[in-house]
Image 1 (cartoon, rainbow, N blue to C red):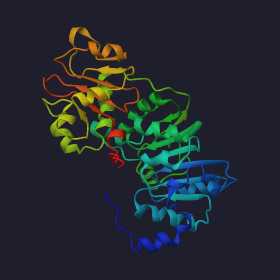
Image 2: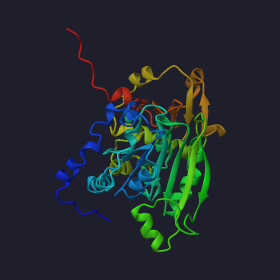
Image 3: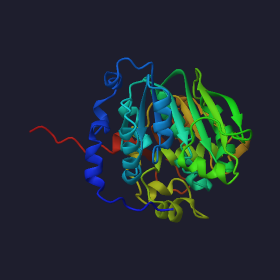
Image 4: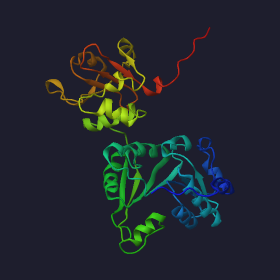
Length: 348
């Protein structure tokens, strides 16, 4: 449901301006300066109208809370709640969760709260969920070792997805429940949670604790394909992606042949291919009973077959090389970070 636009939003925000971090990009490694005596720094993603934020901060005044919210009409209510309660241990950030590593230094956060985040139903939107592996890897960059994620939702499919997804990225689960308030209210509730509780709707909750972890390369080709799309088609519209890449009869390398992203082609692609070991995968059935996904030594790349589609990626999906089955097309090389930079003007 769309939130009604708040009256006098700007002056209301300004009245709470002392608690709004206007440029969080300058704060990495410096958050404790806001409250040097804080025993922990905790982060809430999607604080909404702030009932949980204010209640938790009031209960633990020796903890510094950073509340992130992208909807100003909701955030101003949360800010006013905290100001009216006389709280001085809460600050607010208007930003997207994918920017967290730009705002916080490694290990700077002790705990992250995810309360009733958007479930983003459907496989196509799974990467937008705040418990998707892409976000979990971002959380690992800012959480301290042993730090925790506290996650609550009323959405059963999202919870089941999260119970399966989170442990795959270096977190151990505890306190898993599918009916948190079965024996009466537990802890501080959000506004949504209070409504759901009154309706008798079960609330799911878990705690995820970060442990040491090295990310393995996926061996399931479906997972590899999803990560490939996340890494190399992130800026492509869903309409173009559906029409040219994902629709029946299309191929992943159409991302390049349709010029949906800037890439190198032909000899330029061959020359750009890093001389390093990597991973190779087939989206369709591989020839001669070869595995769909396998580690590939640099010297063996020249032995890969012609006339079939195959792809190379590095372990972290920072570059890809696509070999189409169609003669006269490709190959293609794409490294988003390098190829998104403007060309350097020659020195005269």
